[in-house]
Image 1 (tube, helix red, strand yellow):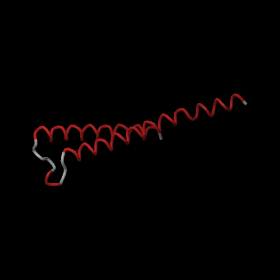
Image 2: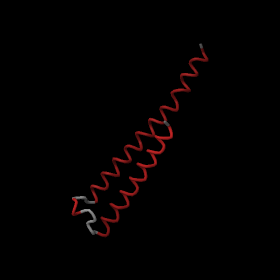
Image 3: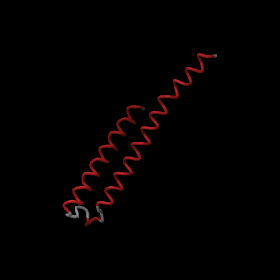
Image 4: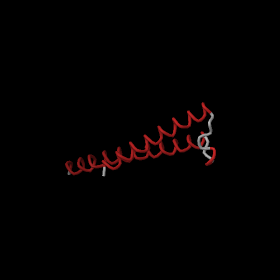
Length: 79
């Protein structure tokens, strides 16, 4: 299961990076790459924020999952 979360983490991080780069290019060049679909640089940045939020949530879940078995094993040893 940890492999799946690691893969998702990398996927969302890559999507956020691509969205951020597209937003910067669209803002600097001003071509309106997605204007025909209603996508503007702010929309790309919001997508980037959403992806980074998923990355943070998955990372915190992985960190919490890694600490939980160690605590349970330590309690069993003390008994």
